[in-house]
Image 1 (tube, rainbow, N blue to C red):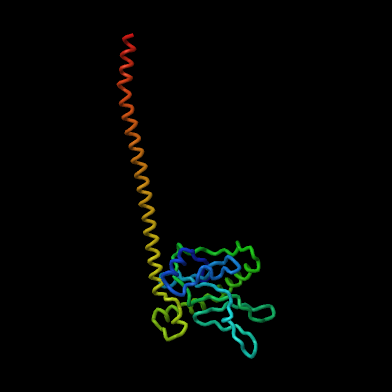
Image 2 (image 1 turned 90 degrees about the horizontal axis):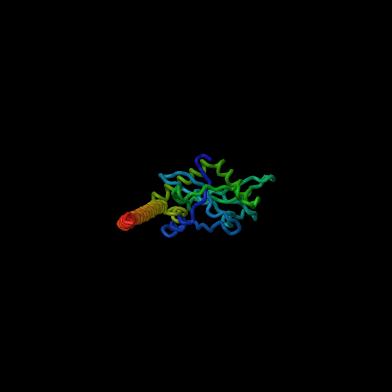
Length: 231
């Protein structure tokens, strides 16, 4: 998919990032009818996996022109995924929220499998969105790169840049999350070492107790043998 992967993100990471950075999509954003959760397209940027969340169509994705409802064109912060119907009309499948893309650790990315989706209509929709991403990968990535550059260079005079997620802050938060995971891993290792040490100490004590018990029994056995010979 031209370096794009379709994934969801772990609940624990989203909760952490929400507590650190503004404008993070909730993991419940797309759970109104289906268990879609936080699904999106992933690519690499600045040494991070950047996740672009997918979203359902909103009223703001349309505009009235001469009394007719038309789909707005894609812009840097929002890619509108469109398909041509059999009648030749455009149909909005959903959007990619580039202004809300987030850096994610590989350990927190969950490969998305649409094969498990029971709702065939919904499955068909996701399949079409994935196909759109494949066909328009370069354009999507180009918009994502522009968005990233504009935000990290502080071009806040541009409206959509001002309200976009703070990528620099998000990357630092991502690194802090990685540090927390490493700390938890170390704590678990220490706990295992302590448990193993306790078990070894317990086994050692049992062996010592067994030796002492054997030593105490020997004089009694000798006495019995002497008495047996006297008889």
